[in-house]
Length: 341
Image 1 (cartoon, rainbow, N blue to C red):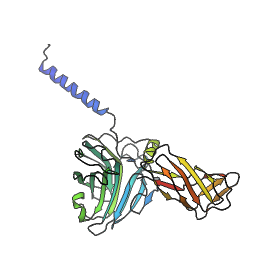
Image 2 (cartoon, rainbow, N blue to C red):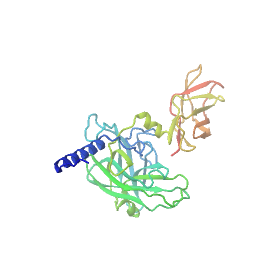
Image 3 (tube, rainbow, N blue to C red):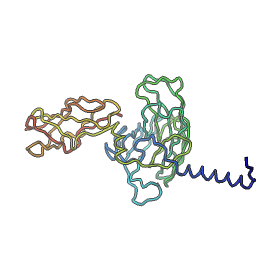
Image 4 (cartoon, rainbow, N blue to C red):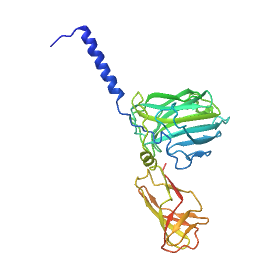
């Protein structure tokens, strides 16, 4: 075996380290387990003041006692504070309550508690506020209805300013050893903006505060070091979102079953997470009837609904006048929202 001098050994060691660093620099980005982390998809609307789902897909914007206005905001073209040229970000304007149970948060539930179980993960995102404020991050695992209680959770309070900053935090999720998994389990990420003392243990004693909070480019991935955020194509992101929520209407065909009712059917390219519930989006859908003209239903309602995860069979909409039985129609407006969150 050839011996090497101390100088050559040091040179070779430096070269090995350079190769390692080069490999890390060109390592592919880690898989992002957050859907719509770039806030590109807003099927339900671009703002909401209600508590629950109502605007940015996959994100639930909740409050109790406290109130908020949540909205889609657009980055200035050419800005350089947040990389990758994102188009949108999430804004929540909070008016704090005073009660111990009052709160305001933004969250996403990642389907199936088995996801990332026992893994070291890293969360990264960009955030700012209207002034220097605190923001609490919580990640926990829920074993589902009828499942075991998982006590392990990650909580960290951070300080945000009026300038965009990137935040990174690494932690380990429970391995689920001996855990009984029930129905509708998940891993949940919470952004706590404001919270009463009843949940101090979940927010690192965040407390009540009013203010404006902005969040962009959220990524949760395996490992202890974050990789660069890699935006998905709109098609990829929309497909992922439509597993949980989609809209029937514009461009969908139906048929007059009677002169006052229409039946529409539609198969899904992407199966939904579960059999969805329906939400009537308009009481006056706009349609084109074969051989006739555009017409609007008056006081229309959904009178029956039969859906599976792969498609809809027989959505009946009543309230039309003067339709011709067996005439085909094409909807020119969104009519029904299908919710499988």
